[in-house]
Length: 366
Ligand SMILES: NC(=O)c1ccc[n+]([C@@H]2O[C@H](COP(=O)([O-])OP(=O)(O)OC[C@H]3O[C@@H](n4cnc5c(N)ncnc54)[C@H](O)[C@@H]3O)[C@@H](O)[C@H]2O)c1
Image (cartoon, rainbow, N blue to C red; front, top):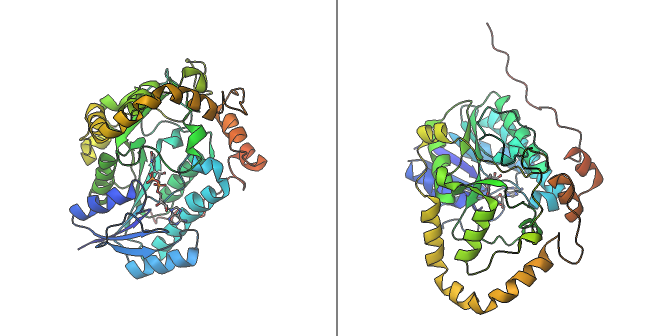
């Protein structure tokens, strides 16, 4: 039975990928720095990806046939903790590629990337395709694009999957405090492309089996998931028994005809990924029905509090709260102020100069 080494296995996406790989006949070795949420019958190996020696030891021990790299510091945590984000998203990926080249050079490497790699996208921009040029404007998007290119130059067989906004019925309100201001920082007309976490896991599991070498694949839900942020916020808040925050609490919509000032979310053409990986099962309406059913009791309990929610949101927003800021021309400038991003990261999206590829493309004899 082929073996898959899965990083970030305890994360929102990773814990679903364990099952997706297992159902496709792969023996899974799950790794992470935490083990909560990992099924007790799964093989788990603790490993901090920022520790190059530990990563080498793990890869040489497991000798995987497939590496599925889900671990990351995601946005907006990457804004609150930029050094950690760099250490994991760049350093961790570099260690994993290096270890794979030494100890599992035939393994197929599935890199779980993000549509953040494309950079800002406004409502008038065309639907993004895999080969469109990328201009990431935040540290997270730049790290994802850099890691994709390192992998492409590594000589390993590989693909990158750029995921849209992953929605999990069980984790709609993330715990990390970085999310609290961030809810308000995406303008309401921002195009967003959601995908149910079970569909995202199906895509990742299929990629581990189909092994589309050299591909960049866009992973979003079917067309029903291509929505403006306004509708996604209203649907989710409504299903959970909360009234959506007042409009003024959100970052004002930038010029609708340009990309500047918008967030990196976009609508993607996922048709070719769907043909290759066959993962889209859950529609947006189906997801929302399930969310409403799950939260029926909470909705009833919260009903008396609805009138107070609007005021509480206005206070929590970085645009209308106590230390309110004026929206800057780009969202990155707002991020730097709200999260107190260090000057060097603010300027370069990185605390170190733009990283050159540490991986030489192997010379091919002609
Ligand atoms: N959640 C989304 O909406 C979304 C969207 C696009 C792309 N993605 C990508 O999908 C992947 C999974 O995202 P997620 O939502 O499950 O994130 P998550 O934060 O829930 O999970 C990430 C996992 O990585 C682990 N990790 C962090 N630092 C580590 C380290 N030093 N060593 C080992 N493991 C470490 C964490 O413990 C965590 O379990 C990421 O690569 C992310 O960039 C996610």
